[in-house]
Length: 183
Length: 196
Image 1 (spheres, chains in turn blue, orange):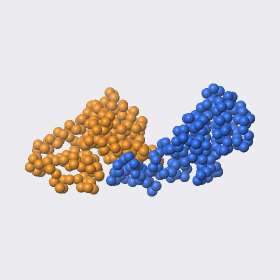
Image 2: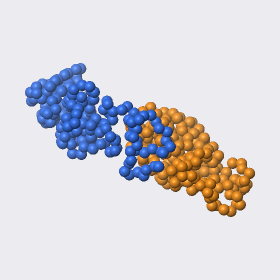
Image 3: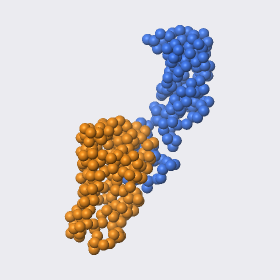
Image 4: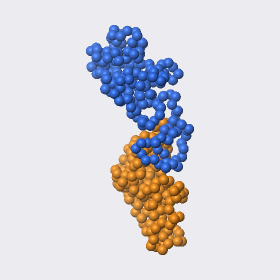
């Protein structure tokens, strides 16, 4: 459908920014180097023939055991041209390495999506205006959608004192700041 | 209820109170998920929970005596459920509506509480995903039998200090001379709770 999107993108950015492109039954994908993400996204949004003015979705894939471990996936849509593009960026794991630039300055819709990705996968979106957990509670430790998070790793905020223990050793009882403790 | 030490009048009076309570349950629907649709059906004219005296949902826990936990309880929401329960005046009862409220259902993961009874005591469990209205009515009738027989969960609940005084007073057909309302020492709820 829109392979011209990829050719236009290649005109603006070299192979150091666009690592790989693919087109399969009308679905276009571009693998982008992390350092060039913001400039590529700026091109995609502001070039008139591309005009990707809508960020449909932002999500993360955890390829545990591979390098780079994480892959941030952006689904873009152009309301003017009615074409779509999927942008992928590899993000390695490790302390201080697991980061990516926030695109919330380009699409405001990225704000909560990036908070969700940070909450569940622990990816640091640099430049995000308010990077807090959005689904889990603040006392939660770890990022539950990572493949190495324990499958039944419950971290309950509250339990009855005589509640039957459910399953596992990973359960930790947390105290909640705005609830009285149940003895 | 038959007890040689009990006077006839207080016993009958307690039976009458129980009868009145079981047919005038004011419900608080704590509806969080899709089971709420089935609850609406139960409330509606076809199944008509009003036939059993529980047709009046109060959207304030302070005016309700039956907490119906309808749907999935997440760990993040569990303190809220506990707070709602604590705000209800005694006597109070709890129905777990559907498998998620009963056991967590098919959600076995980091975010869903495995049953509302992990947080609050539950009197009657209505399984089903979602339960049919007939099941709900069946559960309600089971609860009504329980109320008539004067069996409530607060009598075994631990640590709910607000409930203790009233719970023991509810047993007061134990009065010897028919006048004193004071609790004797062994009538008080022990600190660690009591199993009946």
